[in-house]
Structure formats: C-alpha cells, structure tokens
Length: 296
Image 1 (cartoon, helix red, strand yellow):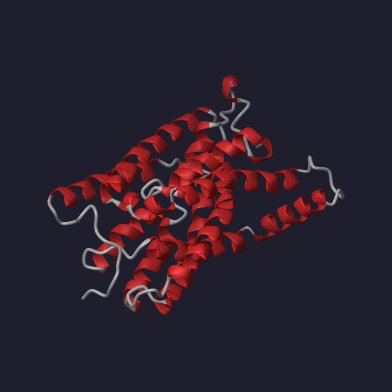
Image 2 (image 1 turned 120 degrees about the horizontal axis):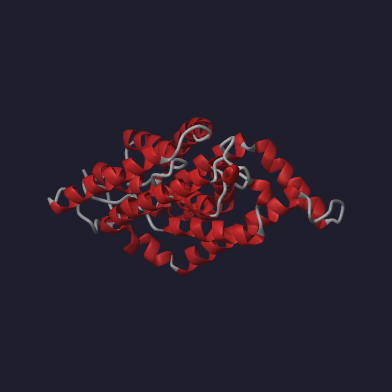
C-alpha cells in the first residue's frame, strides 16, 4: 500500500465510520479499486477504526470520564448502583458482549466469506431499507405540541434499561457483516425501541468504543505481515481517519436534531444498486482475494 492509498482510505474511514452507510463496505470497495482487484483485508479496516474511535473518546471525553468515575465508585460502594452514570457503564459493558462473543465465534468467516461483495450489496440495500423503516417509527414518537398522543415523546438515554442495552448490543453485532454499518445497525435498533435520533446516535458512539478498540488492538498483530499493508501507511490512514471522524461526529449530532436519516437511506440503496451493476458487468469481482503480495 502506498502513501496516497493510505490517505484516501483514511479519509474514507473517517467520513463513513459514524454515518450509517457502512465504513467497512466503503473500505472494501475503495480498497479493491486501489489494489487492482484485491481486498486490503479486515485487519487494515479494524486498525484504522482505532483512529475514529479515538475521535469518539476525545469528543465525549467529559461524558466518558464521568461514566467511568461513577462506575468505579459504584463498585467501591461510594455511590448507589442506581446512579445514572454507573448504570450507563454497566449497560455499555453488557451491550458489548454480543459483538465480542460473535466476533470470536465467527472470526474466520468475518475475515473471508462475509467479505464477498454480493453480501455487502445485500446488506447495504437491505439494512438501508430497515433504517428507513426505523426512521419512520421514530417520527411517530416525535413530540408535536398540541397532539396529545405524541406528548410522551421519544425515550432518551436516562430511560435505558437492561433489556434495551442488550438489544442495542445485538443490533451492533450485526455490523460484523460488511455493509451493515455499526452506527446504522445500532441506531436502527434504538429507533425501533422508541429512542430519539440523538439518543440512539450518541449511545451507538459510546457502545462502539469497547468493541472497536478490542478488535483493532487484536488485529494489530496482522499489520506488516506482508509488504502491501505496512505500518507506515496504516498509521497515517489511522490518524487521518481520526481527524476526519471527529469533524463528522460534530456534524452528525447537529444534523440529526432537525433532520431524518432519509438521505442516508437513499444513498445506501443507490450505492447497492451501483455495486450490483458493477458486479454483474464483471467490473468488480465479488470474491476477490485478500492481499498476499504487492500488486502494481
């Protein structure tokens, strides 16, 4: 992998990680184009996600610090276990179990079989429609002054329960399949449960931290095993992804306070159709090999 490819893939990762359009799908497709029909692999994707998750930690530093502090104090018996931040700490831990367990169980398939582009196309389009459906459900919970049946409004993060935390976690686990989107799957699950768009999105960001860091740190060992995906370009891509990702977080959280997810739904469906055409015409190979040697 050259430095230019690393810059482009870093930008792609930063732009797509937090938007509900699947960063892994974009990395897979763009990576194949740069590698002349080869897939740079799941290790590169997982490691560059460390950059975007670092952006989450920086952006939500105060919230994360408060949650960790109260969670630890609850363990020491210095604050009640019912403390909202202490409970949030437990909810994030519980919600991270599904993706951790399934990631270990299906690791080989995630690294190979599930990276087939036809699966990616199906997930981009299918989950896009699910997101659209969930967004319509969310609209029914919006508070509209003067309309009695909507006065209760959507649920917020202080309404989170153990049941909801597990469901959020299961929704996030679907992102192990390229094309689903970690944020898209988690947000859709939250919207179906009646959470507001901002609440579902903020929790999706927080819930991703343990899973992404665990995956990225685990995959570090696979970087540099061949001459094409080396440490230098990978580090550059990771840093760029973090900087771009921070800007995307700030933009998205402002955007969803007054807008729906419809543009992302349309984008996913159009992208899925475009990729399907490219596959059917032979421009893209659905089962390209992961890079095992440099290509020109």
